[in-house]
Every structure is written in structure tokens, then in C-alpha cells.
Amino acid sequence: MSAKYLKKEEWFSNIRGDILSGLVVALALIPEAIAFSIIAGVDPKVGLYASFSMAVIIAFVGGRPGMISAATGAMALLMVTLVKEHGLEYLLAATVLTGMIQIVAGYFKLGQLMSFVPRAVVVGFVNALAILIFMAQLPELTNVTWHVYVLTAAGLGIIYLFPYIPKIGSLLPSPLVTIVVLTLVVYFMGIDVRTVGDMGALPDTLPVFLIPDIPFNLETLMIILPYSVSLAMVGLLESLMTATIVDDLTDTKSDKNRECTGQGIANIATGFTGGMAGCAMIGQSVINVKSGGRGRLSTFVAGFFLLIMVVFLSDIISVIPMAALVAVMIMVSIGTFDWSSIKKLKTLPLSTNVVMVSTVIVVVFTHNLALGVFVGVLLAALFFANKISHFMYSESTYDEATDTRTYKVVGQVFFNSADKFYDAFDFKEVVENIVIDLSKAHFWDISAVYALDKAIIKLRREGANVTLIGKNEASATIIDRFGIHDKPEEIERVMGGH
Image (cartoon, rainbow, N blue to C red; front, side, top):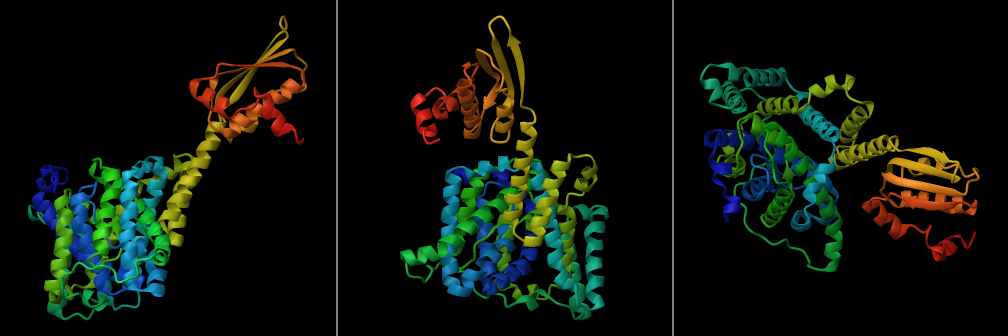
């Protein structure tokens, strides 16, 4: 392992905090991994092996220290049809292919695309996930006895009040204390509530290396490729968004391109050890940070202890009440939601609020994180284009001595302002010379060049001598390459049929 993956400060600068937070995350991962396995339609061990493999490997090769990767609900939803129609072996092969696609994405530095995601979309994504995390706990709080509500409330009380206890409150993460205390209460008092053991059978063996038992041919590739592309895209999107959120929580930076490659390596290894595809988890990452985890050691401990606990300590783990884990996840939901965004609705521009709220609505109602972010980015781009187009205008002056009309264009000319640019010209005015001054303008796309061509050709047909001045280098490049107003043969070819 190269020094690149073993930086001492990323591993051993927060040993006690990382180990304790890793334990909390490991415990919280177990029921989620089982639940996501059930969603995907596979055995619980497939999700548990995936969570172990993803966490341990991403600890070494990921680009964001302290971020947790494992089996996730967003990925599980994409696997349902593949598992139902073709079985587990095809899912394992799809997981390996997913990893390969993600490595290619890292190689081409697609992590830099996060710079195109506006803040409003990130806030909407975070708030939507907080709502989804809370909604995911509701099945554990419906049609249950009063004991569950009491235990959940007691768990939340411990989580929020334990840190205020002098000395000891700062030594142990309150979510871990909550899980231990409620487990002891339920076990010794014999309270009949749903436990981790009721979620499904825990594996009793360590994962082994295996090659998916499928025919290696083009037909198989065509079956798994669409699923792998979807898994790779959603996995990278959720991972990069989570990395951005953890960056904000810890006030540190992460390597997004390395994260793409790391997710790919982890998924390839996961597919070869009998696990389903996974990615970064916002909820578990927030648990980790809130519990004091900062370094790569916390991620490694989470994955390592997850496996040790489910394989060798399954009797103990199986008696943990779900109410304790529900309390922890409600804490995560409350901590994840950006409450200040509600106050800012009154002060932020309407377009920003529309982008944020739209992202939340789409994610919550479709449970599709990628679709929500896509809608948010699309709306933000449209609002931005509309805003920029308003800053384009034209000033007109007339020199009677030379019979020259000068149009001075100011601002950005692109698809959304091209019509406005064209409408600035008076085609009915009879003048000998027309000068179009672009020294304060910038042409961005083909729509802008087309509008310029159309204007110049029409003005010349009205008998004016048209001169174009002041093009900057970038505008000159696109106008000279795609413009036809100074190319008679092109004008004839385009206009000949009219």
C-alpha cells in the first residue's frame, strides 16, 4: 500500500474518537444493511458483506476521510428488477461492472462536475435525505406496543442529554451509550419488542472470494450494463454529494476524483466477495461525524467491527432493540436537516427557494436521489440563463455626416438572449453604413452566431454596408468557425432553397 493511502494524520490523529464512532456506525449499519438486502430481494448476508467490504476498502482508497460507504437504499432500489429476473449471480457481476465504470469516471475526473451543483441543490438534497431517513423509521413506530415509544423517547433523551454529564459525557458518544443502555434494559426486563434478530438471519461465516457464476458473453453484458450504468451514476452522485456535506460539517476538503475511483475499487472487491453494490451513506456519515469520527480509522473500524459482530457476536447483536437504532436514526434526521434553510426562505431569492424546494419534493416523492438532483440542477441552470439574459442590451447611435448607424452590444449573447439581440436592430431604417460593435459583448453558442448571421444578412439585403468590430478572441473563434455572413457560398447554400 503506497504512502498516498497511508497518510498518518488521516489515520491516527483521532484514535479514540474514531474507534468509538466506528463502533456506533457498525451497530447502526446492521439493521440498515439487512433492510436494504430485503428491498433488493437478496439474502441479508449480501447487504452485510457489502457494508463490510465497502467500508473497509473505502477507508484506504476513498477521497474523503471519515465518510462511511456501505449498502444503501438508493442502490438497492435499482437492483430489484435485475435480481427478480436474473438472480444473485448477475447482481454480483453488475456490481463488479459498476466499479469498473466508476474507476473510468475517476480517471476522466468526473468528480469535478460537483462544481456545477448549486448550493440550493445541495441543501435540498440534504433536507430530502433527512426526511427520507425519518420516514424510513416510521414502520418501526407503527402498530407497536407503548414500550417502543417509551424506549425511543428514552433513547432520544440519552442522546441529547448524556453529553451534558460532566467528564464522562465528552468521553463516550451518546448514540453508543443509548444502544448499550436500551439493550440492557430490554434484555434484563424481558420487554417484548422488535430486535435486530427479527430483521433476518445473520451470517455465520466470513465472506470468501468468488467469481460470479454467469456465462461470460455479450448477452450477459447487455443484461447487466444498463443496471451497472445506473448504479454507477447514482452511487457516484450520492457519494460526491455526501462528501460535499461532510466537507461542510468538518470544514475540510476532499478529493472528489479519488472518491470516484475509490468507490469503483470498493465495488469491484464487493462483487467478488458476494456483496451488492454500495456507495457513501449520508446518514451513517453524519452519525460518524456527530459521534466524533474524523479519520479513515473510523470508516475501517465500522466495517471491521460490523463483520466481527454479525459473524462472531450474533447472539448479542440480535437482542439490540430496534427502538434504540430508531432513536439514533431520528437524531441523524434532525441533525442532517438544514433548519436555517427554513428561516432563509424569507430572505433568499425566489429562484433559489424554488430550486431547493423542488429538489426536496422530487427526491421525497420518487425516492430517486439522482432525479431530484437532476431537476434541481436543471432548474438552477434555467433560472441562471434567464437572469444572465436580462443583462444583455444594445445602445444605438447615428452619425449624420457619414450616414452611419452604430449598434454597441453589451453583455452575454447565447440561446436565451439571441432573440433579444436580433430584435435590437431596426431593419426598416435606411442608412448607408451600419457598424456592429461587439467590444463589450461575448458570444457563447451557435444560437448567438445564428442570430448575428441573420441580422447581418438581412441588413445587407436592405442595402446597408455592415461592418463587425470589437470581437474578443473567444467570440471571434466561434463566429469565424460557424458564422456564414462573410461566406457567400455558404449563404447561397443555406438560402438557395428559399
